[in-house]
Length: 288
Image (cartoon, rainbow, N blue to C red; front, side, top):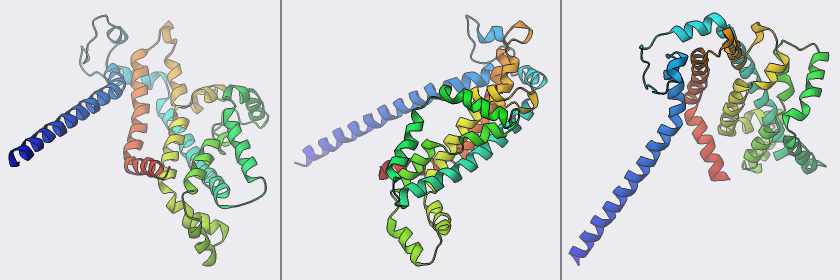
């Protein structure tokens, strides 16, 4: 009997080990697949165009890690100014949108008023409109307000983000109403309930939404291309367009250098908030 139990345990351990090896192999393969584009971008930023598209591709730069492409990037584009513009626009847009979305989600989740559901579904319906359908009237309004070549058109029109309000409302539905009622009994005003109770409890969802909003604003290309025409106001994606068509050829090396620098800022931001981001995703999954 003892021999049978020992044999069973050995087989069980072998199966467990095989499962772990297979799982780690899949994870390593996934990491390689997801990291390869970033690695290609990083190594390509040190190569010239002919080496990037060579029929005999090289992994490391043939002539070493020279900074020629980065020098060209800084000479041709106002990249430092573009990073500053993107930082101002993305940070301001993210902070204000989180404020409006969290307040909207709070209203839809914790208050009862006539037409609440109809208004909520009407708001959701606006998500079905493609951006191309509203770009012309939006541009006309922006032009009449005199906002061309300013930060305003990149921030103001998108502050009441329907997806953000939906996400915050769904998360706040999981917060017990008794917690809000206890705050009312203690004498909290409506804004006090929002600021002192709802916002601290909703921090994981706010972190997730904040990262999504910042990334979408940082990578936005089409709308800044329409409303900005002066180099001093260009964001990072627009600054890279200065490298297209230069001397009748596309400067792929400097473009990869600029793309690597732009993506690095997003990666650093993600790593800084990684723990809160994972907590937000996990809490949403568990509560969902």
